[in-house]
Length: 316
Ligand code: HEM
Ligand SMILES: *[C@@H]1O[C@H](CO)[C@@H](O)[C@H](O)[C@H]1NC(C)=O
Ligand SMILES: *[C@@H]1O[C@H](CO)[C@@H](O)[C@H](O)[C@H]1NC(C)=O
Ligand SMILES: *[C@@H]1O[C@H](CO)[C@@H](O)[C@H](O)[C@H]1NC(C)=O
Image 1 (tube, rainbow, N blue to C red):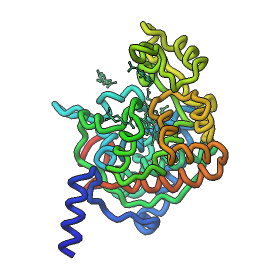
Image 2 (cartoon, protein in one colour; image 1 turned 135 degrees about the vertical axis):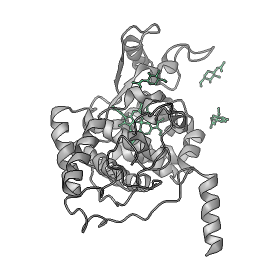
Image 3 (cartoon, protein in one colour; image 1 turned 180 degrees about the vertical axis):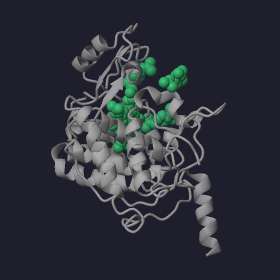
């Protein structure tokens, strides 16, 4: 026992995987039996008004899980001198926090102090995908909310300029495999990117090439017109996939056509294993859906918190 405990502690020190709490599918069956439908209704209500919300919720959950585990650290507000994750560098792309707050409010009136913000976010991300025409899955629950959120830690997120070895390392530090990397990158079938996330690929790429040679030239030309070198349009950018509100396997087809925004997505073609998976998911929506659901459960089971917050924006 002591050996196993020592091993686990060592593992959690040398990786970013926190020692977590056990999750289960029936966690709220006795304490808050309507928890899931309350979250689903809160998400549905806002998605009907704004089709960009599913992408926001999915990305928010990913960011949450990659920093301190899925502990709702991404939801905390800055307090005093502490700047929280949500006010750190990639903040421009996170939005729709109010959807989680609405769900929390409804849950607090029905079963106060019971359902963690981290669980709400994991459920909301699942619902967001399903409401966009993607797969659905059962979410294990019982995450706890963390008490720390630091803007500086957003530097731990993978960058869109990462190559395949950097991506692999970022994922493996969190217990995620190359299979998970390829499946989860399919999340880029939803949503929008600002020019800054791919600007370096389309202007002065390096001293020999103005554009990244791994990008299709006509696609690069189109992006240059949306994102000129001296960009004056605030929040300029483009969707990552023309069907940006439909959860499908289009993103993999775009990778094969070299028409994807991020070097990190294009990099999936640079290792044999990830390349094979891109081909597989591009040709089978079903294979992608199954793999995505499986990897989402894995990613969303990285736990790390200590309490059930009463208000998702502040620690108890
Ligand atoms: C593999 C490493 C990843 C990198 C480098 C990455 C990078 C990015 C970047 C740069 C953006 C655009 C931000 C902006 O400019 O506004 C973005 C958006 C997005 N990402 Fe990722 N991402 C990764 C993995 C994931 C994963 C695992 C998911 C979920 C399963 C995900 C879901 C999304 C979604 C849905 C958006 C659109 C957000 C919106 O429209 O509100 N990403 N990502
Ligand atoms: C986002 O982060 C940048 C620092 O990278 C900061 O200058 C900016 O004010 C932040 N924006 C918001 C809305 O918090
Ligand atoms: C990826 O980038 C890192 C850091 O720049 C570099 O050391 C490594 O050799 C690169 N790997 C590949 C496969 O290009
Ligand atoms: C520019 O990038 C291309 C493609 O990655 C590479 O083949 C070339 O060697 C690079 N040139 C310089 C000067 O780094």
